[in-house]
Amino acid sequence: MADRAPERLDQQLDFILATEPLRTVFRRSPVLGTDRKENSAEHSWHVGLMAWLLAEHANEPVDASKVMLMMLLHDLGEVDAGDVFVYDQAARDAHHEQERAGIERLAALLPDDQGDKMRALWEEFEDGETPEARFARSLDRLQPMLLNYHSGGGPWQEHDIREHQVTAVNSAIAKGSETLWARAKRMIADAVDKGFLKP
Image (tube, rainbow, N blue to C red; front, top):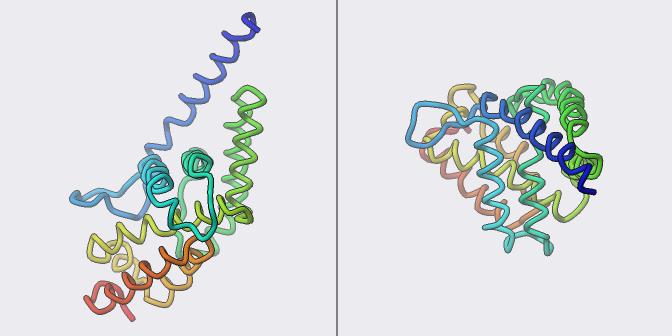
């Protein structure tokens, strides 16, 4: 075992360096109080924090630690594939396989056991069939909504996004948390009332 430790550590450090460019993948949602957009690494950190903090609001009991890890890993494929706008369905469909290829490339850098775990967690998130994955996907939708709402509409206004689009894309929040979806619906209605989301 001692003989393998340096090689294992080398693989882990190579992976860490290979994921660092996630900080250069910019999204549409704003960093509140600034004039810049968040990057995918910031998003992953933010939803990871939400996983720990909001787990009690999941529809079913969830392993918050597993959801946190899922959130840290779920967008790593964007190192290679970049980000796509959640309201652009055609781009999202094409993007999925590019992201999977990025996950495969990065997982191959890791020791086999960790690479296998990373692939499995990413696939679980994408499939959205377990309580943890449903809740993780809810958080992934809620976080940009929070930023868009609290920035006075931000990307919704920049891209002429309408209420029905926001409702359709984000209704999946209910699969992981009816409580969070009820709050999201109130935000959508309030955004329309305040004029920063078009009806």
